Image 1 (cartoon, one colour):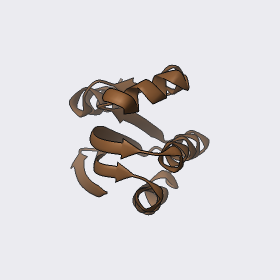
Image 2: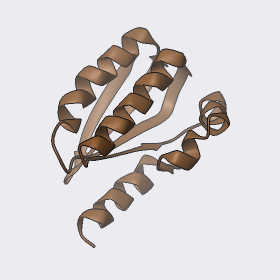
Image 3: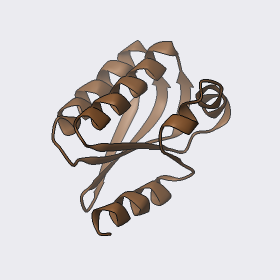
Image 4: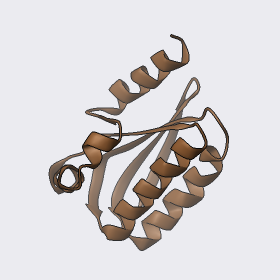
Length: 116
C-alpha cells in the first residue's frame, strides 16, 4: 500500500492507494499512531484510491478512529467507493464516524472547525 502525505495548514491528509491488508494496516498505524498521540491533531484519511481492504484493515481504521477520539484529535475519512463504501455502510461506520465525499471537503470542514 502507498501512503501519500500532504499538509494543508493544520490538517494532515493521508491518501491511501492499493491494498489495506495486514502489511498496509501496520504501515498506516506507523504513520498515524504518532500523529494521533498529540491532542488537537486533524487528519483526513482519503480512501479514494484504495483497491482492497480486508478485516484487518477495517479493524485498524476503527482502532485509529477510536484513538483519535480518546486523544481529542479528529480523524475523518473521505473518498469511500465501491465495496469499501458498501462494507462501511453495512457495518454502520458511516453513521458513527465522519465521512466526506472528497478529501477537499474533509480538509475544508476540519479547517472550519479550527476557526469557528
